[in-house]
Image (cartoon, rainbow, N blue to C red; front, side, top):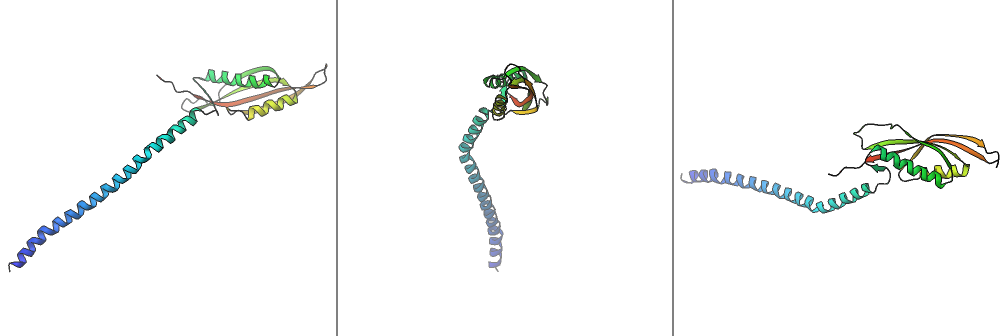
Length: 177
């Protein structure tokens, strides 16, 4: 008679305590797994910082585009770059003109700029100029290439009248205050 109430009392006390203990063990295991994940992430932090620094360095040394404060400077850089290549190959630069940008959206990180080149050249010089423009860094593309001939009466060597567009992209530098 006295045994049944004691067993009932023990069950009423032991079962809830045991269930609470199992619940606490499960929560502790869950927290330990989270702590291990956070520790793993934290240990990778230095590696990720190094990778980020490397990417930032790569981007800052990006020679694929002109980087300048505004569009006028980017046009001047393109103008100077193309002029040097043309003169280096002994062509006669007749004119170089800016073309209006093809995308004016300020939200885009890269903006396209173009110049129109008019020049006189021999075929060998033209080949060298086009090759140097196409393989250059920053990346340049040639568009709307038109070639006509003009015979030089004194030397009888044909000169080519050439007109083409040179296109590239520029990126605005971040201003630091």
